[in-house]
Image (tube, rainbow, N blue to C red; front, top):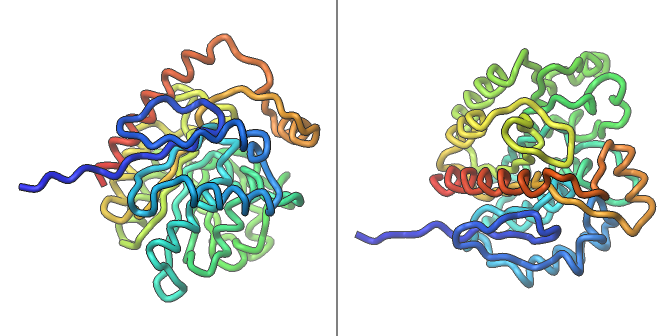
Amino acid sequence: MTVTSSPPPVVLDVDGSVGTLPGEVRLPLATDWQERMRFGCGLRTMRAFRQALDAGMPAVPAHGTVFMGSGDFHHLSWPLIERCIAAHGFSQARPLHVVVLDNHPDNMRFPFGVHCGSWVRRVAMLPQVAHVHVAGITSEDIGGGHAWENYLGPLRAGRLTYWSSGVDTGWGRWLGIADRFRTFPDADALVTELTRMLARQQVPTYFSIDKDVFSRSVVQTNWDQGTLEARHAAAVIGGLRGRIVGSDVTGDVSTYRYAAAWKRWLSAGDGQQTDAEHAQLPAWQTAQAAFNVWLLDLLEAD
């Protein structure tokens, strides 16, 4: 019998927050890239970062799940998904689907390039991507008071669906895009229907997790958090079994003080307080490290 091992996970070590993972490939990126990439960046900087990834990472599919540290770096999913598309030859005729677990839509307006809350629009509008599902949202980012901040293009084009609980999304009806909002009374109902849909679709899927989708009883992150429990993640991963062609995890917890004033202002406006170390940070990071290993075991079983 030939025993095959899973491809190694990759840690994009941009903020020092990700604990050691079994068999990992770790790219030391904090010195050169943390200030430039954290929270947001210009498109030229993103292109340069993509080149750094291509130079330093194992080729797809010779690596497993990518861990990216704080949710401030969720926009790094964009170049990772593009690498996945290129490696597997996805096209309009044979498109990729994307499933994101996140407490936020990550489809919010950002005029300075791309940031951790705007990257989904970039991915949803790629011609090789059939659809993006962002599931687990409890943030008021998709409520009526913030409707104007959402990019409408991917919603109107039928390329993006929000899955939420506890948020009034009735504004979608006024714009004729109500079918792009799946609303549920709680996380159990949401995950039950999501896994049913995934079982029906049977399509190649890129899977991204921002751990702010989970309750604070599961892990602590730098952002406001949702209501999912660990069992919900296990159910979704089980629903995707055999069809995950790429995956990433973000939402670890770290501290950082931006040198750029605009990043300090915008992140503070989003309710972040990352410039002062909390006394419980070591305990939070220990819990995060254990949860990452648990997630990795689930994803490797695919």
